[in-house]
Amino acid sequence: MTKLIVGNWKMNGLKADARLRLGEIVTPVSADIDVAYSIVLCPPATLLGYVRQALDDLYICGEATISVGAQDCHAESHGAFTGDIAPRMLTDMGCTHVIVGHSERRHGHGETDAQVAAKAQAAHQAGLITIICLGETESERTAGHHFDVVSRQIKGSLPSGVTPANTVVAYEPVWAIGTGKTATADDVREMHAHIRQQCGEGMTILYGGSVKPGNAAEILSTPNVDGVLVGGASLVAADFVAIARAASGG
Ligand code: PGA
Image 1 (cartoon, rainbow, N blue to C red):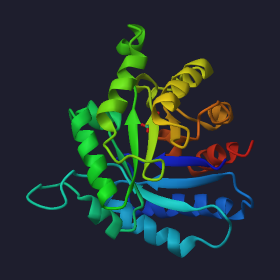
Image 2 (cartoon, rainbow, N blue to C red; image 1 turned 120 degrees about the vertical axis):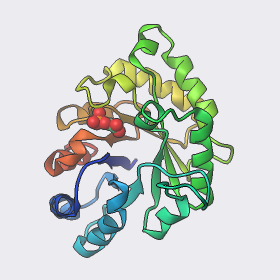
Image 3 (cartoon, rainbow, N blue to C red; image 1 turned 90 degrees about the horizontal axis):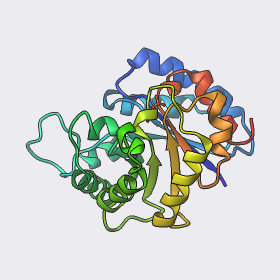
Image 4 (spheres, helix red, strand yellow; image 1 turned 135 degrees about the vertical axis):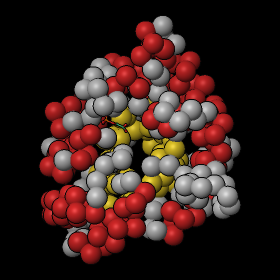
């Protein structure tokens, strides 16, 4: 099955960096025949239109698809929401995907499960595929509550109308994001089986949290891991390409 490799650039990069990085991603990816992966790049909002256009200009051939996704959206379709971006504005810029409920939004901006569900619902109505993030904190895991936390987030953050066609679920243990600590293969296997049980066979389930070229092959070959959500390593083109290629066993 084709693995989904998502690069979350977070709040990093200007046009010049993006252009350079895209060139370094597109060239090797275009050369891959019979690719075992598809790619979604999630640059900051300021670069969404630029990245889409640059990809269209750069892309030469090959089977791999490179889609563009946003890192967040608002739950309303328009109105007096200074600084926010509506889902339809994202499709207008060529986005097909949007991340919602990333832990940096949940914890840094106090977003609740209900707000995440409302954003996801609005995104679906605009025709976007949502990448809905879930994951426990370190103290929740230490206390042994990780399965309950993730079950609660699934129940609360996935709106009605979720289907495998409009939703991707990303398990990102908060303690593994940007820390260099990766969940063990057993942690990932157990939690992904738990999510699979609740979200069903067809759902794409990603793992995220300190994914690097050195651990990507093991993570991607774990049962119920349908792809990865990559933060820090997605800013280094060679690392990101190596992670994608790990989907086909290197
Ligand atoms: P990381 O981030 O790969 O830098 O740990 C992952 C994410 O936050 O999506």
